[in-house]
Image (cartoon, rainbow, N blue to C red; front, side, top):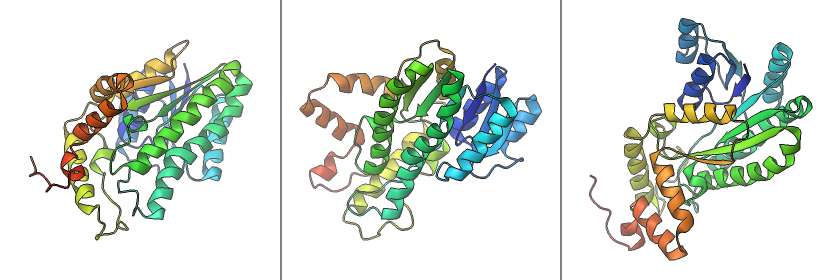
Amino acid sequence: MSVVLITGAGSGFGKVTALAFARQGDTVYASMRNPDDNCSLARTAADENLSIKLLKLDVTDKSSIQKAVDVIFQNEGCLDVLINNAGIHIPGALEDMPDSDIHRVMNTNFFGVLNVTRTVLPIMRKQQSGRIIMVSSIGAMIGRANDSIYCASKSALEAAAEALRYEVARFGISVSVIEPGVFQTEIGRKYDVSSEYPQDSPYRQLVDYRVNLVKKSCQTGDDPQRIAELIVSIAAHEQPGFRYPAGNQAEEFLPMLKKMTESERDEFIRKAAKIDWWLDGEPEPEKE
C-alpha cells in the first residue's frame, strides 16, 4: 500500500481522489489550507473507516508545506505519491486584470506546485521511487479569451513538469500531468471575476459573457470521479506516460488540435469559445 499526499483535497478532484486511494487501502494525507474535522471528506472517511488524515497545507506558504511534509515523513517514513491538485481559476482580460489576481493565480497554480514538489523530492530521491501527478488543464494547450493568466499558469506548469520528468527519472521518480476539460466541480461554480476587476473594463461584455458560458458548461460537465480513477491508474502504472487528456472535451479536442494548421486552430478556438461576435465587433448574442 502507498502513502499519498494530495493538495487541495477539501473538494472537487482532490476530495474524490483522496477517497479513491483510501478505498483501495492506501494511507492518504488530504491537505488543505483550513482542515475541518467536520467537512464532508472527514465524515465520509469516518463512516467508511478509511485511512485519510487531514493535514494543514497552504501551497503558497513554504513553512506550511515543510511542516506538512515533515509530519508525513515522521509518521510514515516515506512518501510514495504526490498529487498536485490545489489550484484557483480567476478570469479576466489580460490588459486590466488586477495585479493581485495575476499573482494569486500564478502563486497557487505554478509557484505553489513547484514549492510542494521541491519539498517532497528529497524524500522520493532518497527512497529511489515516487509518483508525482500534476493536475493541469486543457487550458495549458489552448489560449482562451478571458483566461490568459490561468492558461499561462497551466502552460508554465506543464513545461516545468516535462523538464522535471527527465531530471528525476534516474531516481525512480515519474512525473505526469493530466489535462481535464469541463467537469462538475466547485472551481467551475466559483468561476467569476474578483471584486477588484474594473467594472468599466472595455472587455467587460466579453468577460461577463464568457463567465456565464463557462458556469453553464460546468453544470453539465463530466463526473469528477473519472479524474480520480485516472489518477489512481497512473499512480499504479509501472511506467506511466507524461500527458493525459481527461474527460470527453479534452479527449476529443486535444488530439484534433495537434493535427491542425494555424488557421484551422484559429477557427476552431473562435467557434469553441463562441466569440466570433466579439472578434467581428457585433452585438452579444442572446443567451441560450
